[in-house]
Image 1: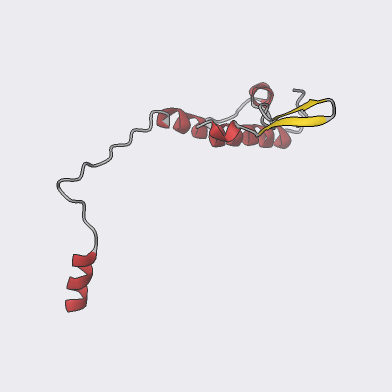
Image 2 (image 1 turned 135 degrees about the vertical axis):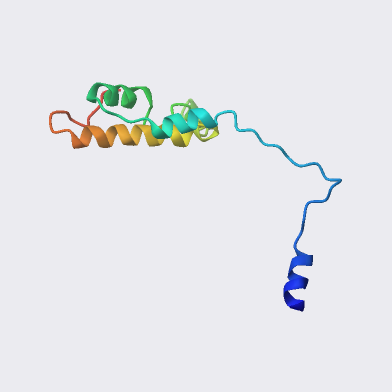
Length: 108
């Protein structure tokens, strides 16, 4: 009984004087919508694959006279919806792969 009592008293409990952090995810409804979006049409799947690039378009290497002056890393991970968009593109590609009449190749 003493062990359980000591365990309960050593656990940290929020103090009355400390303010609680209130975090509001403004993008939560959009994330939820993107995760639940169902692809039912090959034309929509192809459009999604065209709109969402397979590689980050912001990554650049600035070269002058054969020397690399600046390397800009891919910044797509800074997008708060990056994971949801990549998952949507993957679902679109899977839909196209499952359709016998359409090909997976999407011109970008």
